[in-house]
Image (cartoon, rainbow, N blue to C red; front, side, top):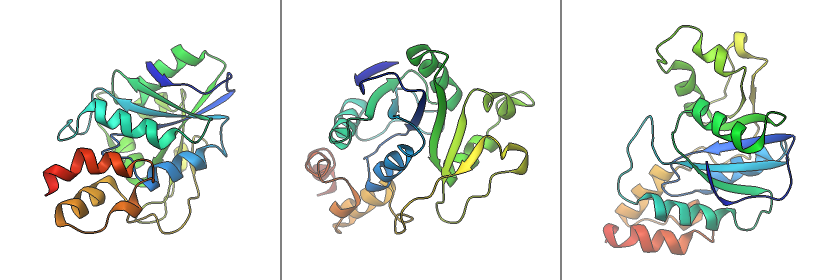
Length: 203
């Protein structure tokens, strides 16, 4: 794991928000802020390799620059790049960086949680085994999230402010392409970078 910004101190509990951040949105940052209710530090992770999609359009360096801008005002936010994109791989990189005493909780939306639970990992019991290494905190997104009963001790709901259901990086890109207002969907510090990296292609 390569750190580009790291909070001071050694947290007993670390919340992790991994994503493609194409671009970072106000929903991403609301989820990160909600994570501060669960942990002393929130680590924003941009994987260099993505398991569910490929890097296209805006590249890794530009996404990293936008993510650092989004995280700049909160001293408890850290920003890092991971070698791989699966939660379990990121968790093990975090374990190496933070040590065995730090407990880990991944922050995600309902869609990402359902993907995590339904992904074919190639071996029976893989999800149960991974949830021994970390927990999930899941925000409602396009509907209320209900953890499967067998994982209820390791997966929890994470309340978020209302009005974020329709906020997504996909919607930002769609609005830019359509010439519609989009600035309210991204953090103020990120908007100039979005204009730079997405604006020309959208003209």
